[in-house]
Amino acid sequence: MFPRSRSVLWLLAVLAFPAHAETFTLAPLPYAYDALAPVIGADTMQIHHGRHHQAYVDNLNKAVAAEPGLANRSLEELIGNLATVPESQRNAVRNNAGGHWNHTFFWASMTAPSASGAPTPELMAAIERDFGSFDAFKTAFNTAGTSRFGSGWVWLIADADGRLKVISTPNQDNPLMDVAPERGTPLLGNDVWEHAYYLNYQNRRADYLVAWWNVVNWSTVSARFAALKP
Ligand code: MN
Image (cartoon, rainbow, N blue to C red; front, top):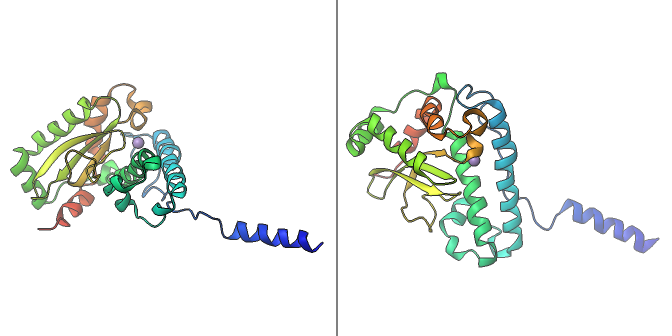
């Protein structure tokens, strides 16, 4: 009897204090699943957030649990220092920490079409300084998005000197990663994986990129720009 009740206590202790705490969690979307319709429909948002983003979070937790040295690193520490991640988990962390960071940033970059607004005068001035015009910036962004072969992201970044640039990264890479050929602070990013647009646009990525401007949350993008260090 005694050993048996001891093993029950042990089991309860294991359940109460799991060996690997859930390090990363999926936050709810900051708006309803149908808030971005008709630009992005509720079914796309549900699958994209609830399945794709959830899978990045789950796989990131598995990768972090597999290497004790990774336990207390923040998401930014992980993606900015992939060279220090043990090789056994480096690709898993690159793909899944990248996927988690990118999607969290992406959801916050969008809002209902009726609320999308416009860049602040300060951000608009920087866009005009570095791209010539707002339309030229959007064209550069759309071109980078359509010409990304396979899956990836297109970004508006500020480089170390505060210059704005449009770049594109493959897979779930982003401009904060130490492995990125061009680094900078992301101000805006669009997901050009097929899962982001296929139900609404099928293979017409270019149409998705054009329509997507209607859901860009310019107050969030402008706040990111204002937060840049001078
Ligand atoms: Mn995605």
